[in-house]
Length: 500
Image 1 (cartoon, rainbow, N blue to C red):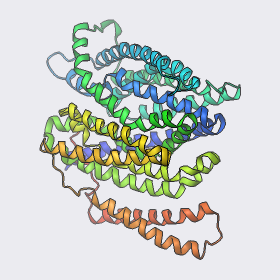
Image 2: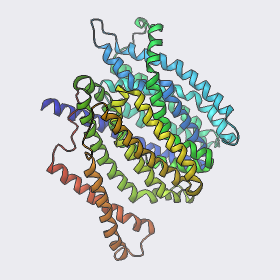
Image 3: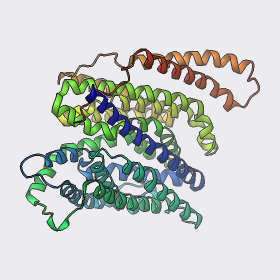
Image 4: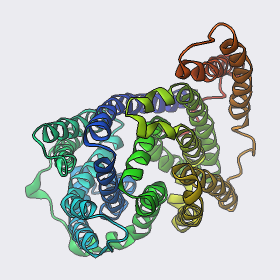
């Protein structure tokens, strides 16, 4: 009982700290979203969105998968007769990532020059060339913050990702707009945020792991090269995961242009709370999954990830209902150009919920069968690459969102199929109850909301009348979850994870 309570406490603290980080970060993103989308305009914001998304695609390659794979390295460093300092393990990782980051930055600059004019505008070409070296700041931040999470201390990531990076980015971007740098202002802000992130993250890792003792650090080139080769599958998996998460953005930009991808980028930012529900758990579940697999095996870990899926999906569905109530009002803040994206926003949210909640079990594939994890993301990429060009000419950005929802559903099925080959077979309906409750809540909200808007709220503003049904659905769904937890106290528990 003590171990179970301990795992629940560790996960709750880690997820709570991450959730606080995401609330703070979303507030910063909201202010930057207003600066970028409203002040700079849809076209300039679209250029920045595409350029920064290309950096985010390059980061997994440059980081060599060390955002996750540094955990086994750190675990190994504590074992044996001659344990190695954790700070030196981190320095090894940063050294490898620095070489990879420099190479990737050069490739990104060359790519910016090689892309044909039919696909990219001159503004996007310039932005890609200017933003490429910021890859280094991002990978240093990712790896150093991962090392802090290994010590179960989440506050540093809260500060780094929730305060330092986004608020420096927003402040510098606003200042650049104020002095008239409309074409490059957001790129300058991104540079400033990346540098601030890297400096603070390395300082945080030193505070968690101890002094670096640089004079005693002796990197072994042959061993590092061997480790780099071993990291290639993990790096490839992270690259494909990132590409699968952003391929819709790239295709919308290439097919529909800078202004359209600017609108699409705003919608992606507004659906961020759905993504952040999953990410709130990711930081702590990743090391705990590795530890549970090492001590209890794959089957027990599969039961733990199934419980995590149920918890994450329950929270995500509540956020989607809240988004349905507030989405049109949020889009109205950015101007008339963004007001037609409500349906695409909700479709994106559903796709992210499917991919996020049911993707937790992919951590098992990531550690045991990385080639299969690659194939999951290949499925997402292929479906998006085929469906988006077919749907966007007729449905615009809504077509891209529908394509990603279809891809997420098929990828979820394939994950389950491949996990069964490892003996991981959670109950097929382990997450059915929150889905059914959300569906019933929507039907009830539509019924009661129609009555309310036809009587008491007749003549109200259209945004108010449209928000009534989702709000009723949200209230019903929240009440159901509270009753469900009371009737079955362990149904939303994460106590199957091993913390030590």
